[in-house]
Image (cartoon, rainbow, N blue to C red; front, side, top):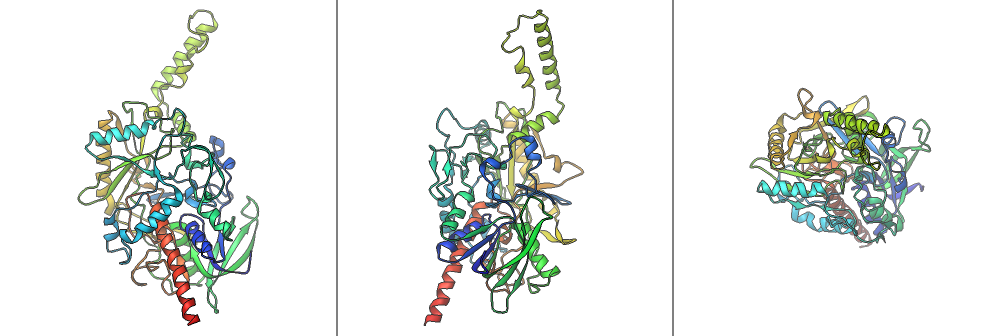
Length: 535
């Protein structure tokens, strides 16, 4: 690691990877500090035992980081590639009406972002699902959602997803071997065939080819301005899986981009302002306008009128808009990894399963005693694997325009979220009403999320937004429309934290587009400054 870089980037998700790539391509020296490890496809968890050890905690550098707060839980990722390692592949643009809301900076409109959406979509090769070569068809849950939504009079469609389904190849950006999707459904646990176009297959390797340096297991703890300009970034460098063993160090950047995600970036900047006092003039808006993107997870329809096998196929494939007069709402099919489905099957004591186990034992014992004419090839083995719930279980992901009125703050030095569903309750009621109607069209029984049931009444989000939102000045936001922090020139934020409202759609495409725009701005303003000096 050098002592100073043109740009130091904190985090390697959709904000950090995009800005690192474009700035490195523009000839800037770039250093990426990532708190997580670099994952190889063979390292991703697959068994229930491996999954149990894959969560981030005080000792373990896990792939999944699950945070529990009073009224909302957050699931996010850790590793080189950030959220792309575990997200559900969807790459969709937010509706133009979203950007018309007054919370957005005046310079951000859908038309403004469209060229940058285009760049990101091309890089990630996002498009609707085409079944892979062989005897693959569209997954059962894809067909079920399209059919049910059509019967509702909606206009369902296949989602743009960053999943490769062609013949085996070398990725055009990284050169890494890619196999087509094998419908394993384990997108949430990392893709072991590299069919998923995660950031470590495109933006990050392109950045590295252009000289960017990536440093995993480097957790940033403080940012402080330098008298000569730029910033010193302090970090802990962990050498092993033991978080008690680390070295402290620092690196300087003429520019610094914070891209640690909604929770991570907000936590770091709050610590710099309120704990370390190294950035005391950060806006009082810091930590405000937290949104869960209206995410509604863990709900689904049981006993639908066909086999859907939710673990088969890319985790999200189709969806439809069911917005109302007051709220934007979008619903999608959802698949869970096999270890989660096997756990669900074993954890629920279903009467049908016990009945089938007894039938199997009866046939098996009678066969042993020579009292049964049942086939020696099966002896009722099929009974052991029937009578469960997941074969005809269709899970959903709902997203909508929640009130984005949460607040993040420090509690004992760590991030905490004060969020309440009251101002968003009408939207969630409208969403569930649509899910109930959809379930009826599929002849199934709708069940809400266990977390949402009375008296718990809390949610789980995979798309935390806000905390370092953009605004026209320091009174209305933490950063300007180009992600530059008010009162701190050359300090930027580029990730989900700058988004000031719910998007009511998967946010990765919007984060990437905003980051593409921020990188273009940095390059253009640097060029302008150099031209002025030369003149």
